[in-house]
Image (cartoon, rainbow, N blue to C red; front, side, top):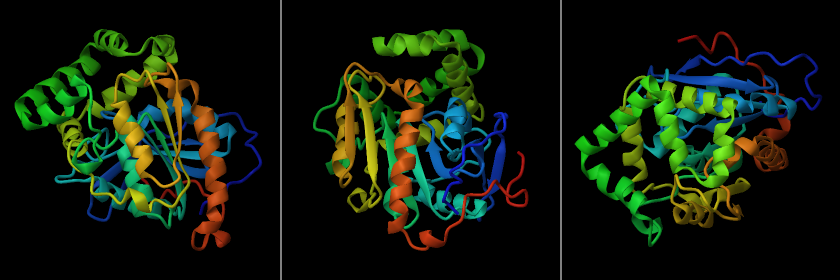
Length: 331
């Protein structure tokens, strides 16, 4: 169910449902928020690390205006989602297939921001018959194995090569960060701004951006630190994802002043995906997306509509429907 209703919604925008859940086949719960137009073209947005379903709150109105249903599922252990031992990029792609099945969505685009990038790429590679477009914004790229960049900065070397081998150190770092977001948000936000590129300062100074980031990360950290530690471990190992088999149109946007992720690894990810259109933005930092939400969504929407002809049964698909109350529940 993936062809959008093309007429723009005329009713005033309402607050999106933020605390929805689906129950996966193994009994785990996946929390998600449902932004934009409930009958629009489905795009699944994957949050950063740490993060939650609330990270896409500022995309609600742009998605609605573009006729997009932007679903923001959480990963295990973040927010209201159940934890999962031994999870991988591939296992999350299977979760997403079950998630879409529960909502009755046959085809969908995926967009991953920062730490959500590897999961979006995994879905595009492992669910080629369902994913209509792939968007990567300032993504974490491969940091291990043959696909890793030859050289990374000392900060990323420490994060991805050293701390995963020292669990007590990693736990301490995540614990301090969690306490900051939950109990000292002003202090932790000041630290976040101090690490950002100069081009990010004006973006981060906007009250709505501040509220969005603090709420989204705090919710992701609220259950504890294990999910964040688990993610860093996943990113620090070889992905074992057939990126060369991605068939959907792919786009990658990367600021060249980004201080949060390894730029060589992010650009390397784009090089591993067939026909990926990579756009580098001079002087842009990690938070460039907050000024370009509509642009990214519009690009993915157009590509997804064009790609539907490649996918099985797409010609018989109907407009995406709002969630069925029988398939979703409140936490």
